[in-house]
Image 1 (cartoon, helix red, strand yellow):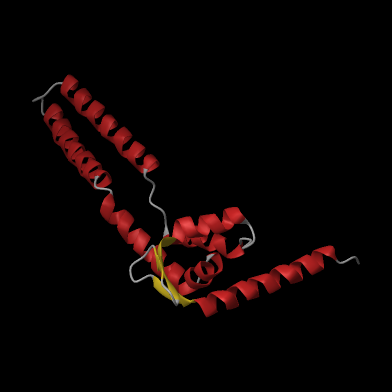
Image 2 (image 1 turned 120 degrees about the vertical axis):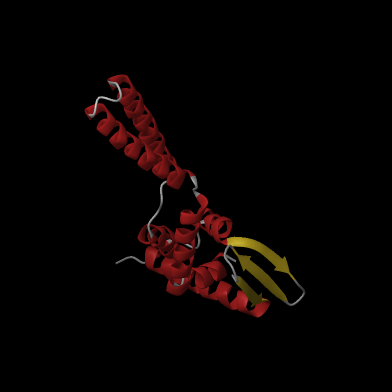
Length: 169
């Protein structure tokens, strides 16, 4: 199963598609950052207007200090939101997904991570397995014959790695 997942998911076109989707979702989901940024911009305008008023003798310094404090509070909230929910770049996402290309398919932890992260569901039929991956239109139907071929290929790779590892030079 992990080999099929690896072969199907870790293609450049799929990784690129996933990275683009993740970047788009990040921009849509966090409503706090745009809200806080707008609030900060508004406070900046108020401070500018207040400074003009103070220069004209219409307001006092305590009002300006209160607006400065409010601005600092919003800046802190904005910074915390950005730290707690950082926006990843497409390159960072591609790098993170691509790190699975070099994993050891014989490592149970690697196989478990592959399935946990990329596989949504597995449906078993009499003649095939339908694997649904964690992205839109991410479904792959695999026959048992294809699974056997993938398993044999993985076994052949294991045997050659074992042969090389055990060979004395």
